Image 1 (cartoon, one colour):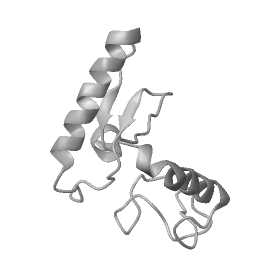
Image 2 (cartoon, one colour; image 1 turned 135 degrees about the horizontal axis):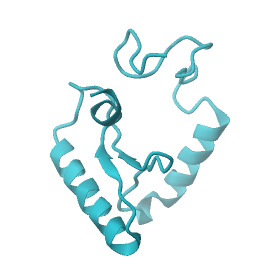
Image 3 (cartoon, one colour; image 1 turned 180 degrees about the horizontal axis):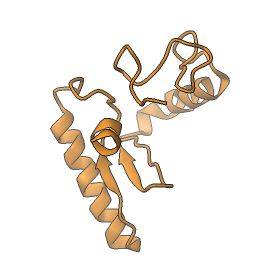
Image 4 (cartoon, one colour; image 1 turned 90 degrees about the horizontal axis):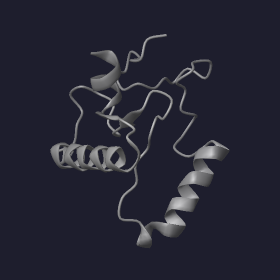
Length: 105
């Protein structure tokens, strides 16, 4: 399976594909529940991040090489600082970056 699909964004519109995102945003029960939980707490949330702990990657949300937001460098700096903080607490190392930057290059 290729990480990138013909659209170039890492998801597929094919319902049989492993990267199928559903027919619309938050159409699947799991993603709908997560979105609702975040919305209920959004006034108290200052940051949200995801970790891929199996391979110890600190994945940033933007999947395309050329589709990074204008504030990407700030987001990357926050991830770099978080990775250093985790290491200082328990000695675990994480690599921060976007999926294509970490996995495909």
